[in-house]
Length: 187
Image (tube, rainbow, N blue to C red):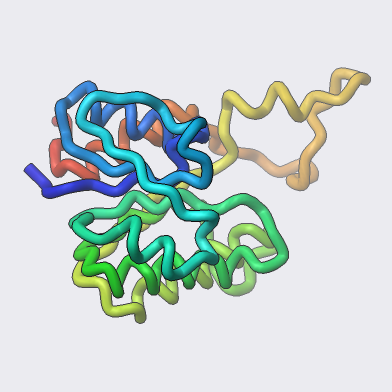
């Protein structure tokens, strides 16, 4: 069994589901959140607060003792890449040995989708950052998010033009993340 797992984004849908699944399996974890009052109350989970990913010293302190980190992407912001790289640097400084980062499908430096370019930059920083091991999970558009994209006229409105999408459920992303975090693959 893996050592202590740090979970970021535990107050969100994917990170919250990752934390719940780890708790169901009895795995010790540390939830790193911005607001302790919003953190889920789960067996085997301790909570640490860091204002955001850009708060390097707070992140480092929150991650001390964590062996594996589930790094959910931060919220959209003009300095999102800087926040991600600060969080990665804090994890390395805290002694985290493995980062499992929730990236995006087709993350490249030339991606049309801005967020995919940001995920690529974060991946590159993780690769170069000195962590012993890393895994990049590649999410796509969330199937359970699509209903929020329906306009009042009944059209799905998004940045894909006439493109196709391979959507997936956030619960499936969380289940895959837990399998990777714990090394317990279902065959």
